[in-house]
Structure formats: C-alpha cells, structure tokens
Amino acid sequence: MVFEKVQTIIANQLGVDAETITPATDFENDLKADSLDVFQIISEIEDELDITIDTDQNLKTVQDLVNYIESL
Image 1 (cartoon, rainbow, N blue to C red):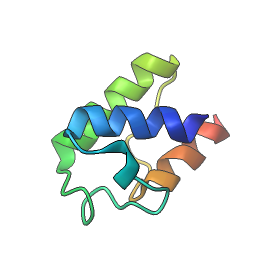
Image 2: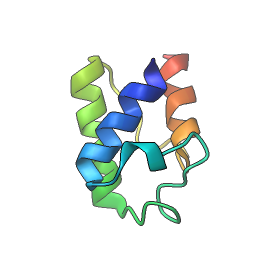
Image 3: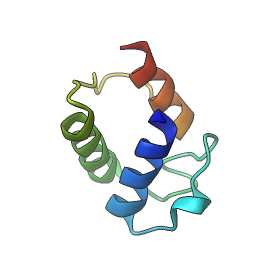
Image 4: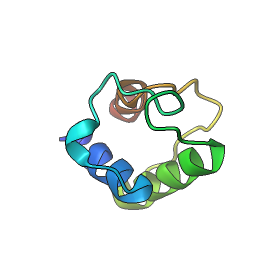
C-alpha cells in the first residue's frame, strides 16, 4: 500500500507513467529528479500520509523511501 501511494505521488509530481516506477527506481539516475523534485515529492508524501520525513536520510531509490516511511 505504501509503495502504491508513493508511486502515484512520484508519477504525478514528475509527469511520468506510474508503471515505470518500481522499488528499484533511482530518483536521480532513472527519473532524472533533481533535489527540488525530490523535495516536492517528499512534501506531497508528508501531506498525504500526515508524517514528517527526515530529509537527511539517504533516499536514493523508491524502496529506500518506502522502507523509511514504513519504519516510522
């Protein structure tokens, strides 16, 4: 469930097809997301899930982000 929600938010923020986003998808290398893109994705996830994400985490892939959210 967390992955699907994160996948949808990323797809909407970056204008990409959600089906292309997998747990192994790398924000920088695969999605060409810059730091502002990642910040906007994190902000949207925080609003949607009513959580706070520590931006100092090393969140390189979608799975890194999902694991972090699930650990909260």
